[in-house]
Image (tube, rainbow, N blue to C red):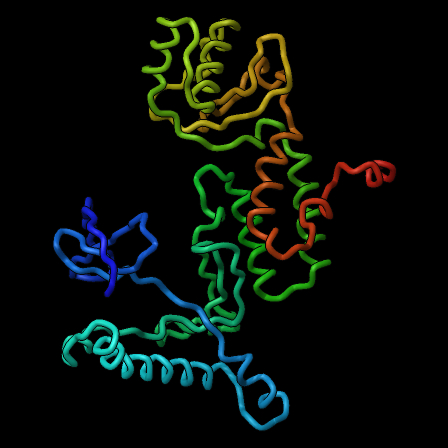
Length: 328
């Protein structure tokens, strides 16, 4: 007997590329079969696999041809064979009539040249065919499909987004470990030489007024770090009688910069992203460049490529004693 669970569907979204409505469901239970609004649902997901381990010896011995076109044909055939097997499986496992068992279908989604699997639902693949649409055209090897990675997160500066995308692409293109490490080192040097306030983390500030009023009432209030950083900017404007710089208000996009220990006891300060001319009092603050570089680059780089066990962070440390000896 299949164990089932009851869940409540809270939202139905319309997909961009279809005229039909579908249930987009997320559940905490690991069991794949459950009831939602009295509808029996099977929680589905993509499954990645490779036939190469089975074919490798024959291909290398010249007994079996192997190229992208043949790979697509093989994986399409595998999908067809799986579909043929579904009615029998449904009858055996769930006592479903043949016509009901035929309802469940699978299809070959993508073929990829290479892949990097980090954790569940965090991976990247270099796709050369997407459901029959060839992507390896005009001299291009394909297109990167990334899921659950930091490449385009709003709290990652655009320059770092581009760097992570480039280094991921080169990794999927099977560049050498040495090339990837040198690429990361070069970017770290470039980032290190940027102005301190350019190394901050983008954040949108919400509920600033709420927390500001709470602080006035209580003297000290708990709040998200980026909200505190925004209040620090507004307070510093007043302390410096700055009527030229824009104050931060609710909903504004900011850049949050980390600070070294200081007399005010502040750990960070934010500034508006559209502030055209940063004031001198701001530029003279004791920014913690090392902490920002570690947060913005090292942590994200390790999250992306740490699974390769290349010591990507340690081997790209531009602040090591050894390298400092040879700095000009």
